[in-house]
Length: 475
Image (tube, rainbow, N blue to C red; front, side, top):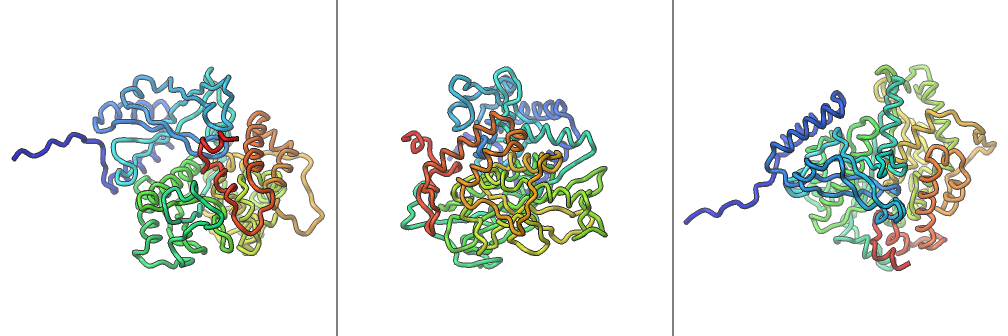
């Protein structure tokens, strides 16, 4: 009997080869020019017959991950003239100016594990441009990249390491079908570091970590977190744009792995009342001429004067930046001091309630751990705001005579402080500033004003990473 013909022969790469390819791509991104990278990957795509499509992804102003698939042949012919309708993305552009361009960033290629994402595709991050090819001011990935280039010209190289926590709950699309009377159904009753090797939570963590390693994340440790059904997978520090790309891919990997298991990975800051919430701690280090500028053996906490000044600037701007770091109604539930919440505008080496912590470090790993960032924040906007705060001199500093300053307790308070901030308007640009405030006001208006003790249906269904277009269009 004749063997059946294999009709589809799309690209599938073993995990060890995948990791080597992705790590080599990351190394090439640091040493090759954009034109050299374009030539290299254009040639590769033309020769590799098993690739069917190229995925270009970007992040909107609120932090939602967006992606488009282009047929490979079309991409090779029209890659410099890709467009999309920005007005269909909430808060991105008006209908009268809807057409936006999407330019591939050739330094950002990723090959994907086919057992998680399917076969035959590669991923690039894209730069959003206006129709006239000028930079689009709501694309904070491209704005962060420009800022990092300017700093590098001054021999300043920031590094970011993100620690992103999340929960795994039962059922597919558990967020879209959330009911406050029932809440989420957790898959584990364990806690910190505690899970049997073949329990669903540990299988999820192992599967996601394997996929991330294959994608070149260079994972360092992967484990259950303090709350039941909570996880954290840590990966290596790197330059800011790549670090933010990895945050977006991290959440995508976790969501897809969970969905493949019939579960939901959620990055709501506080999906379950009465237990610890989830954060996205951002660790900032700064290198000048390849030396860690935040290290001083004789400084307090062994932190240099430059590191101490950076911490002071971030604390000074904390309340007006809170809407960027904590960008949802649900995020303000996490800022509860009973659950190791970083709501205190202070710096400490030991107190996990402090907004900024100084971890134990050596000369190479000296850093600030900014703990007040929620996992649903736009990582590019968050890191952009941090770097702009650290490297710009501020006038009219917010010196406080109080011994204890706290972050806002609701999104309404955060919105008021944000709108009053001339500093945030200056660094974001007035148009992006107003767009972002309008998006946050809309979700605040569609959710109960008082948080209470029960996580409300509205604060989940109208969350910027969760809501469906159909639901929003009813208003």
